[in-house]
Image (cartoon, rainbow, N blue to C red):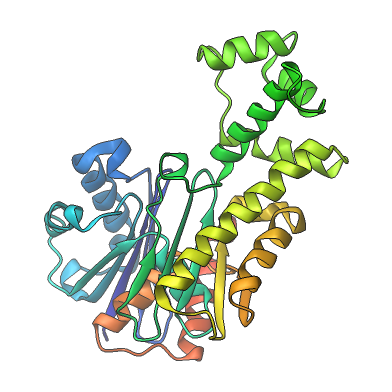
Length: 329
């Protein structure tokens, strides 16, 4: 029986999943961060080896038993990285066909009804890719956040919120409950100490404080609500850019939402949806309901000549959920 490998290699954790041609999961391995931008290519390889060895061990298989492998790789952003990525993965000793994509792509394959569409990711950072119906053409943004004018993940949301706290302090903007909330969160006695510590990098305020912004907004603070609305519109514009690249404006397709930011609900999703529907009125927004690694397995199946049916997809998703019930998507 053929077996297929999927790898979701991320900035904080890495999942390796092995399934058979019916979608039944036979092995799972978890490892640490694998983004080469933070751990280097040697660190990436070590993470992949750890996760793969664990998955193969649970499955009772050798690497030679695999018939296809899909890799969703965080930090794989440019064609110039292809050669070194391929060389790193080749050191795993796989003999099967391999497909490498940015880690936003498996979410599309796993979450879109027909396996193609647009994938919008917003967690610590943000990214957006699209996959055409021919499963060959792709659209994308750079994934480099504020540097390239693409926002907003949790990092950018907190950064923008702190800018508005500063606006309130210098009397450029209205007062906001975010000031007191941030001060309390980091133990700053007042806003001057907060901004002093933040700008001089003695205080670290990052994406982990994004839920705080949502809580303040839900309590009715107008400035916090404004910054979340801004983030929703920014994410919508990223999706619209990819929609234009793939000429999806008149098509019916899924926009798959993945990442912790979307747990914020309508405050973020409503402006995002409004922005997208102005350009593509037949777009359908769906939350990713399966771990992204399942999309990587489906890519591996395609390489091995298996066309995943609805039944195979459902079996794979259910098996993966049963194997990893506590995982956050």
